Image 1: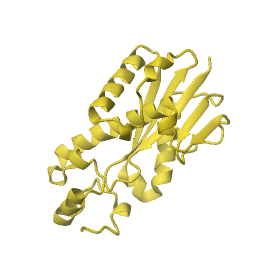
Image 2: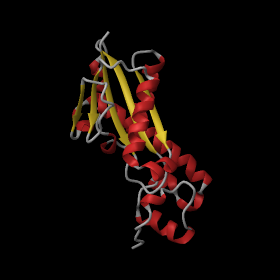
Image 3: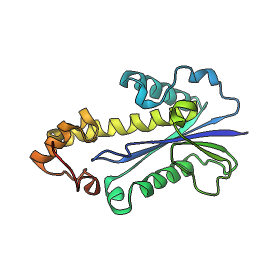
Image 4: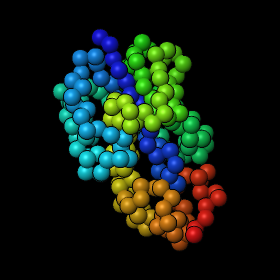
Length: 195
């Protein structure tokens, strides 16, 4: 059976927390009507993202599609860089889903699958144009956001549940007041301005 795979990441730019890579695999018989209304995760409300994520998990249970999300820690990002972390997350997901090297893979933006995957296509704004990438972006963002909400309980002074680790004014003010937590990306906070 032929498979179609979509890949996207969430959390490339935040000052804290992991980066998430989402991979969604569907087969050639998958009912494409499922995708009606799907958009890039950043253009969906949090309520809509949660709905899409729940539907996706439901289809996974029914074995109609499969997906995996890998969270790569801020420690790996600091040690090896964001591109390495994203590629590591992608490789983990592709292995977990046992994606065959003959699969057609669509990736968002500047992402590239390992070279052995010959049928891969990187598409600028792919998360807006290719539904299976949009779904991968939703899975990655929902998984990461939920992780950051849990982190917010661990470090209430940083309000992670509000800004999800991004460099908002609130977040920068919290860093100025409390310093860095173990979940902050030291390499991303070196040149921080607090204004």
